[in-house]
Image 1 (cartoon, rainbow, N blue to C red):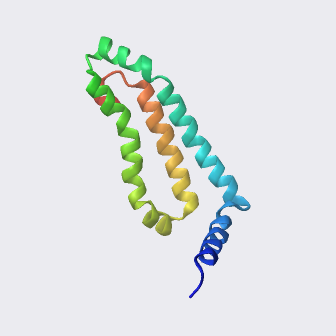
Image 2 (image 1 turned 30 degrees about the horizontal axis):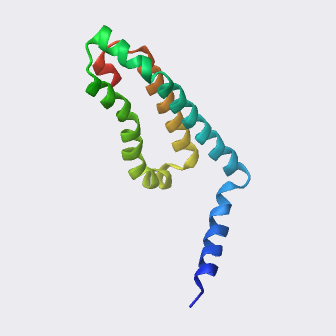
Image 3 (image 1 turned 180 degrees about the horizontal axis):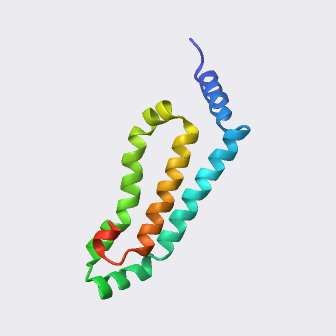
Length: 118
């Protein structure tokens, strides 16, 4: 039997391989794009509720559902992401994810009704 500290050391050594070379650049790019997208969307949240209520007749509950849709869809998409990465490859899935993120952010910004925001 291996001591628990040795198992932990091996696990840390295995995980450190994710942050080397090209993988580190991909990881930082993906995390940076996701962070900036969330920062820009949630920065407008105090103003969006007033805009949605006055222009579209949306309630506070509806606005809450609109802002919960992105994290919920990210969670559901991550459930199948492992199988999709094995099937299509990391580069293809990263590019598809960034394109979907850009398209959904653009659609969110250009939509003028409650159904378009969901």
